[in-house]
Picture 1 (cartoon, rainbow, N blue to C red):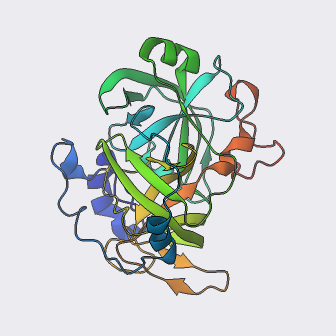
Picture 2 (picture 1 turned 45 degrees about the vertical axis):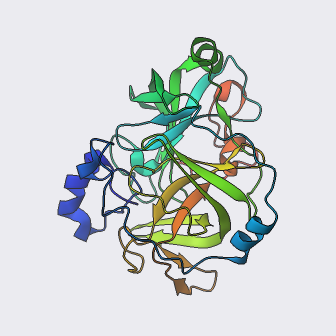
Picture 3 (picture 1 turned 180 degrees about the vertical axis):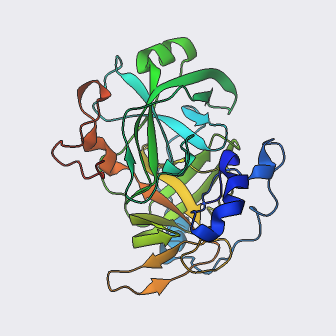
Length: 306
């Protein structure tokens, strides 16, 4: 994770105490016109997989993936999302990373539910132009334990947003993504899209004091940079969100800030410098019921509880 704008200077002071990094905008990138040179350094191609080669041979049908429905936060990216069974009259939701939460990184084991928020989001159209400012009413859910997500509940419904701006929410897939899937990582902060494949899945991804389960590893073409934190990861074939972009190993270090390591079921540790990761989102779907209300006790909901 590369530090969010509001956390960068603070993190410089306490990094030695174990504050986790984030694929969020670095402090010197307050003006998105100035891309951070350090964050866009040359990426290693050491983990190119057979899945990536296979996709070049047999390209799947591709949906029209655009910026429509993505949002720019002050320090991160995100998207307006809906569950497969959400109603047009439901309050809309915005998905980003746990480490993009405006009140700071949730501690390991911490789960935030129903926290008041008036955070604003710039809604983008298909061309990447900001067309509206949306506002949160509350943080429906946020954690950096097992996964790295924040879900905001907005003050407008899906129908109101579509009626006013002609933009529909992105739908979360309710199934586990598959290795080899062609994907796009769409950053509303930078108005930039990365195209690659799902290289595989990580039993445990450990970074600083945080550990995430069953993370998505990208093939090397998705060389995401600071500010792409919270970007939706979209399946090219279905157009649905299958993950949320969150981190990458910058310097080749092991399990440290900005340098996540992979830990397998036997405890073996592997490091892939220059490779980036995302957290799956299918497990969010069972936790939201009628009216987009969070229900952590619902059947099939495995998100961490407060």
